[in-house]
Image (cartoon, rainbow, N blue to C red):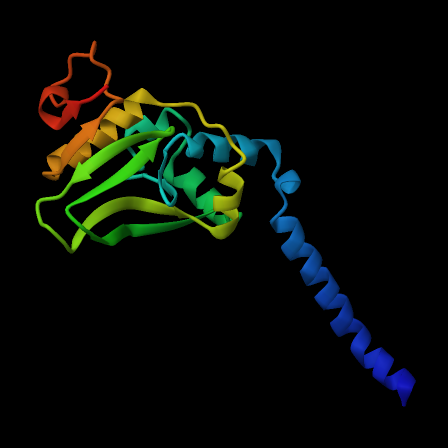
Length: 184
């Protein structure tokens, strides 16, 4: 009887052990191949922080993303390897008061909403998974000024009032003088 039980349990134990190995290897930084690591690092330059990292990917066909290798196909690949969640309809963060702050490369941008409460912010099409969130903390992504100004311009067009120290004063862009009160 004992041998029968052992024979019955062996395939189940084997599958469980194999599943545990797959789960642990999928969540190991060293198992990310160099191409996937490079792709994820490219995504990390689009991270803003508000508590958790938020990859602000608004238009996957915009050159601000595609020039850095971030396309619909690469986002689908990152989703397949469990680093992000991609949603065609996009994500929204709700429940903001009159003001909030988000950080890009460690520097704050203050956002003022039109209403005193119940405000929301469009986050784009991508969120990091728990694994992607953990992995993002290990990357030191380069600052992308073109992306920063792209985001600021989008928020300005949505009617948000912005205050930031990151706008390049030497650049002549239409929205700089209208979007932000620049502080030092």
